[in-house]
Length: 617
Image: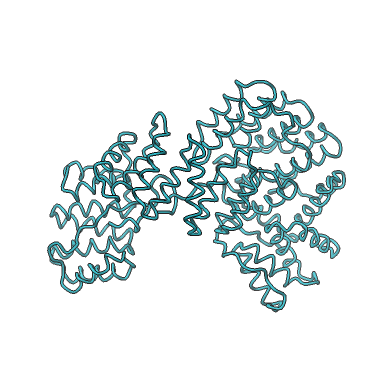
């Protein structure tokens, strides 16, 4: 079965910036936030982009002479609904024109400008809306942003009193007021503003984190460390930023033991890029003791607050609001690394890859998130089919750090997707050699290298890797499927292979390609009625897969159902089979199934979700 039909993915995981299970308060409020923050009033709600939909591609700036007002409005509304905020901001601005007689359009335009990071333009529009008597939460928020930018915290604090204490603002507003109060009145006033947050079920972690940052800003780093530890203990998992803050405070307080303990505590939960972050934090230990407070001024505190809320929304896929929140953060603190990384992730999820790359490049060189950002740039290049750029970046990352595993794994998968199987096997070998003590989850690297060896026609090495993968994790259905299917093809270990395929099907009864392997094993062993039964199940689960339809056609032919066999081969031919399979299918349609007519596939099928990744090759 051709590899390209069912690919193993290697999409870079979105950096786990916050807990995987957001606080109950935000999980409950996020769905309301899209209405609350874009409402022009109780009778004119305008939904900010929700969590569904795919953004269309990046587009050139709209030109005045190219659109009528109605055309710009309609196209801008479509772009807004599809969350292409760059295009929406251009077109809705044209549609809005100089008059503000349409409150809904003005509000949409404001949201689009904020979501494209055009904060200056958003401020100008907010003033126009205010002058026209249009009141909304976002107008107040943007005008507050203007005062905070200038460092006029007293006026900004007054404007913040206009923000309601419900829905998303129930969580966000107290944090914003706290930092504005710090700027206007001092530490104690700031902490007092957080009191409403402490009374919300599920928001304690946010309240304790902000308290710690304000306390540290006020000069008491030891109490700040205690408050941060309390915030960390509040959640099931440790957000990367909180872990870094605590490590920094512990080092400043001379407690290297506590810093190391936190790194290890974070490392135990690290997944995806979390291991790179843990390594970066660990490297901070032994460096000169940090001196500056975690938050240098209230603007940076506001930026962190915005980013924390944005990340909580991202954890539950409310990316529309997360986008403009992240832009507000970067407007106040352009060097806020976690905000730049979050913005890159938002753009990459939306397939705005050039914008994603620009955002990732904003992550400073000395940030613990620098390496994840560079890996994500490589993945963005890969999606753009800029394979040379992706490979060059990954090789540089892999060779520049002799402890690296993640860049090596990502490079191996890139090479494998481009059918450079021998090179892929070598790179996977680099990753494996750097593993140290093997853990159960390391089965994936042996599996991937085994696939590369098998495709490079180096079966003995491939077989060893598949067996090692099963030694580490005995019941992995994808490994069971691949190894057992290949044994059937080679007429080796047949009884063991059938048992393995049955186990794999038992674990993944919804995956047609694994059921296909079991059916094809029956076919290869001459058990044609059993093959028909399993292959019919497989095709029902993946009705447009050319290989599965081809196999079912072969099985029908063997049991004498020739008309149905030709129907299945015809279907397989219509579903874009691999170029080398199309002539074989046509031959079957013309001549029927004859001995040695290419009934056996060259490789087992490979699932797109093996290893918990997405898309790719």
